[in-house]
Image (tube, rainbow, N blue to C red; front, side, top):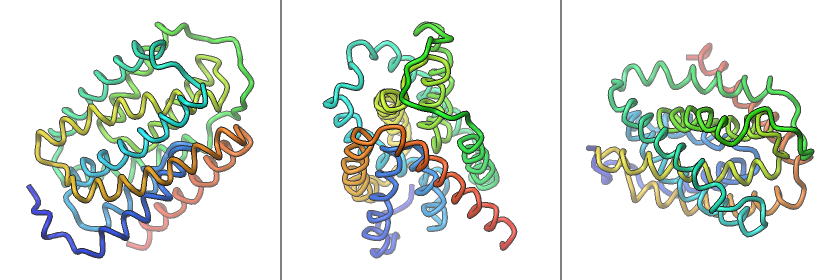
Length: 256
C-alpha cells in the first residue's frame, strides 16, 4: 500500500480545487471522472490507488448531489431501492474484477475507455425533459442498470452518462429527473467500490476526503443549477465537456 506521506503536500489543495469543477460537472451532466481521472493519473500514483481514491471523492460528491435532487422531489428512495440494489451488486462484481488486472494493463486500458466514453456521450441522441413511453419496464431495465453498475465498479468515468441516457432512452424519463435518479444509482455503486478498494488497501482516504470536500461543494452548486435550468443546461454542458476531453486525450496520445 502506498504511504500517504509520500504524496507531495501541494497535491492536496490542487486536487481539491479540481474536485470542485469535477463535482459540478458530475452533478449536472455526469462524467466528472473524465476530468478527475486524467489528472489523478498524471500524479504517478499507482492506477489501482487512483481508482480507489477517485471513488472516495466521487462518493462524497454524489452523496451531496443525491440529497439535493431528492430534496427537489426528482426521485423516491423507496421506489428506487430495488434498482439501486442491482446496481450495488453489479458494482461490487466490477470492482472485484478490476483487482485482477495489473497496473501495466490499466495504463493501456484507461485512456482507451476514457475516449470511448467521451465519444459515446457526443454521439448519443438528443435528450430533453419530455417524458416518453418506456421501451423497458423497471424489471426489464434492471439488467441494464446492473451492467452499468459493473462498469462503474470496474472503471467508472462516464457511468453517470450511461445511466442518464439509458433512463431517458429506455425508461422514457425526462432528462432532469433521470439525472436525479442517476446520482442515487451513482452513489450506490460508489459505496460498493469504496468498500472493496478499502479492504484491498487501495484508497488514500485523507486525499480522497480532501477531494471529496471539493466534490461536495461542486455538486451542491451543480445540482442547484441543474434543477433550476433543466435539460437546456445539462445537455450542452455534457456535450462540450465530452468534446473537450476527447480532444485532450487524443492530443496526449500523439504528443507523448
